[in-house]
Amino acid sequence: VQLQASGGGLVQPGGSLRLSCTASGMSSEYDFWTIGWIRQAPGKEREGVLCIGSSDDDTYIINSVKGRFTISFDNAKNTVHLQMNNVKPEDTAVYYCAVGEERSIYYTGRTVTWDYDFVGQGTLVTVSS
Image (cartoon, rainbow, N blue to C red; front, side):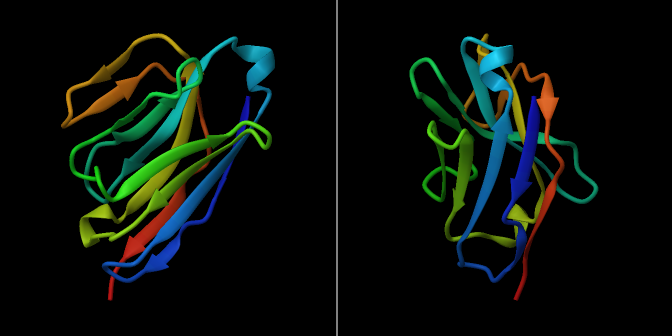
């Protein structure tokens, strides 16, 4: 599976940005998958942000971005999108898309993790005025 992310950049607080990640080879690797975005802010550990499962399209979004970030999957293009609205400086991070077989998704509200096998190259999002 190969993941190609795009869309990062500099955005002002309160602005919007859309990240995309095109996946190739998923249907050969998995019957069902979970794909989502993780991020790593400077000096912090990597954290799951949001994900979507292919079997039911259920989405899991951490509380700190809920109401501002959404995730969607375009089946025709095998592309997952992360729409970021009303961004805040604390959203500054390198964002990675990650995919794995749809198994357990561990969601607490404050955190979300899922079993992923492949991680794309990161794309930097900087929120600053």
